Image 1 (tube, rainbow, N blue to C red):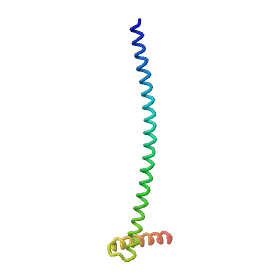
Image 2: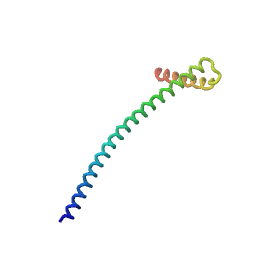
Image 3: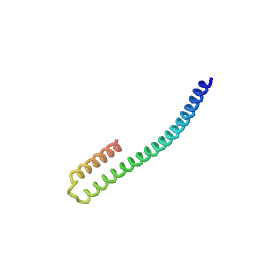
Image 4: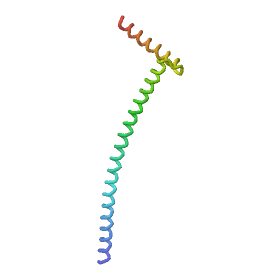
Length: 96
């Protein structure tokens, strides 16, 4: 009978350790999920910032070319032609 009691006590001790380990893993998992959410939020903000900077870069390049820079003359002419076509299209729609 004493041997069975030792086995039961051993199993009981192992179950307690396993439950403690599981609780620790749940807490670690919760911390990792929080960190993941923070990182995803950071990535989202950085992507928005990248888009904004791309738009600013395009605007600055366009302004620079309009000021007479030779580097982007072709691109500026294409952009102006595109704007003129858009305006003509709007005028045509208003005329109808």
